[in-house]
Length: 190
Image 1 (cartoon, rainbow, N blue to C red):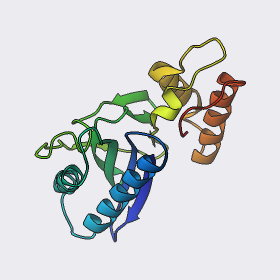
Image 2 (spheres, helix red, strand yellow; image 1 turned 45 degrees about the horizontal axis):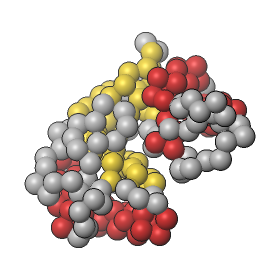
Image 3 (tube, helix red, strand yellow; image 1 turned 30 degrees about the vertical axis):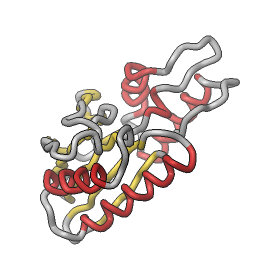
């Protein structure tokens, strides 16, 4: 049920990361529906707020009660400007030379209320900065003692590896999470 997409435009690109409610085939169907919704709306030159609002209405109108998705939707430009809206999703993390900044959700999950508005926030990425997006499959992994990885460890993890190139940063982060949860069966997508 995890959802990830990049949609390129001439001067920017959209990035989406989310997690739909449920597991198995039902969650896969919801994720597929969400994917198609955003792919269809992306070509309509909507502001980010309009894009997320319309996707929410469509998703809400076509799902049943209890079906929802947490989601970060953002638009990034080549000059480092980023706008984003977070529909009840885990914090987006901005790693820069000054440290890691946690950017909390700006609204409720998609599909909860059909007329919800999603405030848009912005930030400026400088050379060497990173945005770190993840689903609860990272923060809710457990070790063999029953300890949850948690949001604080995710921030600390990023802080330790933020200065590395993206591929090395991701590899180091995944290795640390695998070491933390060694011997424990995974219950969610990572």
